[in-house]
Image (cartoon, rainbow, N blue to C red; front, side, top):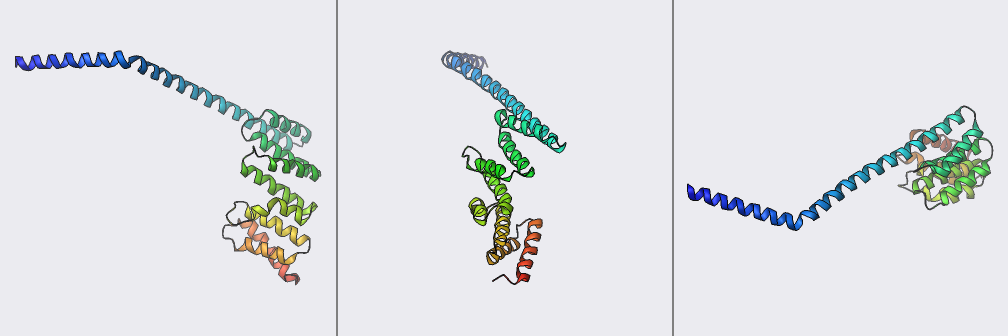
Length: 221
């Protein structure tokens, strides 16, 4: 028993010496790593709070601009959106540009709205999804005020299978084609919408009515 106790004491001393040697060698490094972890965590938490605060302020400013518009204060709304374009955060400056274009179109200045939407669509710094949305909005405005070529230039690439905006893009192209007397082309586009099982119900219903109208007109071929 005495030998066992002695052996345990020796082993304990060896472990202490080994631990001391490890600490002497790696202790400063471990402390440095711990400090870096604490600082990194603090920096991340601080950045996240700063990021969320900026996003929340921009979101509030955007909502306020929409409120002004709903109250009929369009000039104030446009001013608020212009300010948001300058100092907004995240996607809000782009959303402000898109909304401002909508205001201009609603007020009758379609040319200015299309110019703004085209500028958004051409800006490579903007996410592709928002650029495509700008193209689609411009095309829908040009269905009434432009030519088929004007519409096609903006949304032809969006009307392909697999594109999330293909339904609306095909509808815009179909309406523009019908407007220019290209009944066969229009019918093909509307039939594509009707046959696409993923087409939203409201768009499919409008496409069905247009297909029936074109066939009933006798100009389908």
